[in-house]
Image (cartoon, rainbow, N blue to C red; front, side):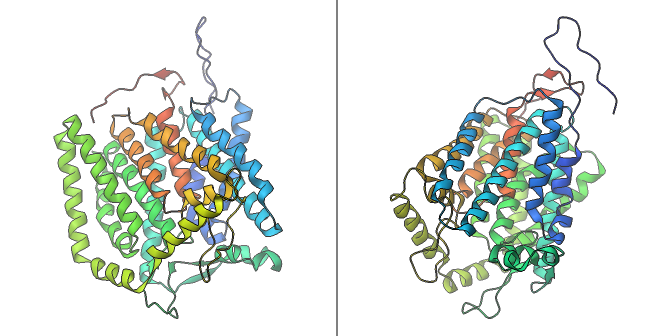
Length: 431
């Protein structure tokens, strides 16, 4: 790699070697390989360690204002380990702690790699990740009973591989579907994630980024096939019957429309309305309304979630400062563990009320700070941060959703950087 020229005499700008792109690209572009191997998002821990090594080796790591909120959360999360009471929960706590540290390193890497990880490049990589998710959704629609025994299952010892969470990793399924269940519900695509809700969370957060990337590449050949991919992606998206995803996408659509009206950008607003029309046609064409009605009548998931949320809050009152360190079994029969049905509830139950205030406070700070962004990419990233704030109420956003949010925050917080490493003012704000 060619060395950078030294700074001019008297300049207060220090030119540093650009950070390489490959660790960031490997996380998302190679995700199908990680999924098939059985590693999935766990491999991001190793790649984040590589990023940390590269950051330290280069030196001069910059931190944006406000990151202290998130760092205080990490400290508080670490202290809450005193609430752990079993070895299995300690393993789960350690794994989640490593994921939290990993997304922090991803944030710092993107924030400090402005010369190499340009906004256009990052949007492009995340767009590839979105295409991977869409492809996984189609596999789940076409082959709902497909399961893949991954190589990870061959190397793990029996005591570890027998764990329920590990079983979901070493035997990959492409949909959430139980033909023997008492409620006869249709298959819901989930690949390349463990659960359909994870698919819906990632899809709804990435779609604004994909649209922003379309603006970046307008006039290029890739624009047209990517534009076609958006209506094509609606098929698996709708067939997830993911009400939380519908809410997130609807919120994003209305929010961007209001922002465009305020700015008087009629051309962009017309494009957004055209997209909304395509969505409406797809919704009317596919048997979505009928399946949603059937799912609501055949499943008590909404009532069950409300009961779990209430239980999580009530039990946190008994350990309000540090929580319990990890989710625990519900006191109600046949209910999921408390702290597993929504990120805000997991953080509150696991790390206490101060923990959830710090966690949500960081996301709120990132959203508020990014409101000033007016270019198409900035508006999309600001929308992503709004969506993750809302979806944290009912989705577990670990790890893909939180990683996407941290990347969005890093892009909006960092100063723009010229190829040489010099900072510049943002230009061309028109939204």
